[in-house]
Length: 261
Length: 89
Image (cartoon, rainbow over the protein chains, first blue to last red):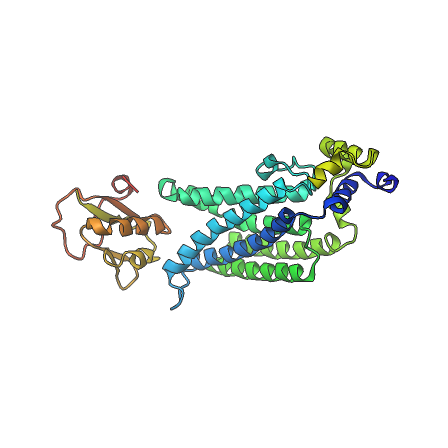
């Protein structure tokens, strides 16, 4: 325990928890649903662009791709809700229910977690306006629907920044594949747009986002001290500080009991 | 009370989903724009609603058939535009 006391605060809690109980099934569920959600959102961006492009094939009539776009997005919301519930309920990381919808209030990796919160808020806006679409002004729905192109990279960075598995080769390969697919879909969408300033901005933004993502992975999650850098400086969060004091001060403190529960 | 589909010819961009979803009620002309059936039989109302909801530009509306059914057979929407058509769904 004297060793623990010497270590930085949040790290102590997290490592003490991991040592005491090991990651629970909930934590594995959070990680798995996160990856599945990324795949579903990727598929959905492609389907959305295919609908705008009026793509149809013998095996994929318009009716089918439009229905898939709708149903895959509803499925994605379901998976993301499970992702959020399991991460909140799991004692491994201190994440509150409010951080599901309100960004920047979690003591655990505040910035990277909040990207997920923001992406979830966007997803909710996208799905709710689409469900209410017949009763909304068309332009309002369409304006909100452009958020989809922002939602996807924000969700991706959330996964890269706070994902427990983002350094695994398999997950990195999945991420790279998803980036390629979405970049291709966005390129397809931009080719449909009228030539002009908007299209140019779109192309530059797409290229910038892809390059920024690659650079971020290189200097961020792939570095050894990333989990410390991504986490909270303990002093910033009273909740973490309290738990850390408990964990560090005396051996089976409230923090550890809570972990074993 | 009969139901009738109407299309806003300005908003319609000819995606053709309505004809996919309600082929009994909507046919496409050679440019891909809808030709609508006169009235919607009650048994097909659910399909008509589905087509209305699926329209990418919300150009298709389902409303009451207010005027007599005696319009031309290949009715290519002469119905009122948005203001009237959007009563329910």
